[in-house]
Image 1 (cartoon, rainbow, N blue to C red):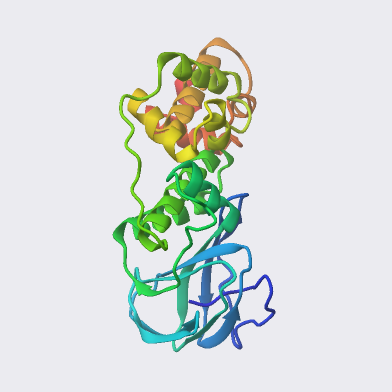
Image 2 (image 1 turned 180 degrees about the vertical axis):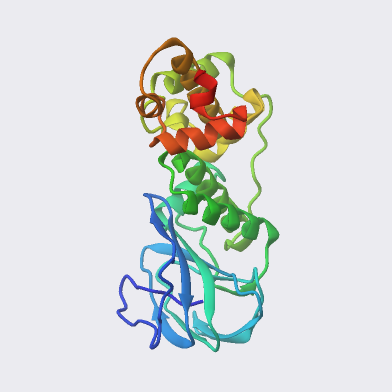
Length: 292
């Protein structure tokens, strides 16, 4: 898989010709790029981020990869992955039109996940450089991340952060230097903690609500919090927030004469069309028709 840039190496593909529609999105805990290049080669060195490359070509593509003192050549099929830990120089050569997803997670984020979610020493649990690997869970999570990034909706940030946490846990479990088991949590959140979270969401619907902030209210890791919240409510935090925003929008549509764009913004949607899309999905009609 190729790379468009490097944190400490300036080499670029010799003949990149990236697609004009290439996806690129970055938050504090995840960077996503959809890369398309014609045949070429490149060096890559990301000092502070771990990188997962997921091959998206419809036909197998021949690669040569060199990292961590080892070289691998082979035909990468759709879904094959390359994992490059932080501060691991990588050389890549590809012999056809490249189409891959590049996902990067900060080393500091994986360290925090290792400690808060898996109860491991974050300085000792490292990722292993891996060539041409297949993992259905990681492929499914990566595909969801790509789809969510393509939506580019501000209110989807919580969902993207949730996926980043799940991705980090699965990377550490499957490609870490030591085997890890997820702790088991049963019974959901105590009522007083659940009410604390629900009150926070209710008060903040108009703005951005981050998964890390909700988890921080209870002193939990985002991954742990997401699982406990779903046990209590039957839906994920992201789904609950969307549900509550729609309920508030329904109330304002019926009880006020505010413009629909103003209602959308007051409920945490970033545009009239964003509200309409979510509204139609749940209610089957547009906000205008619902208002009557």
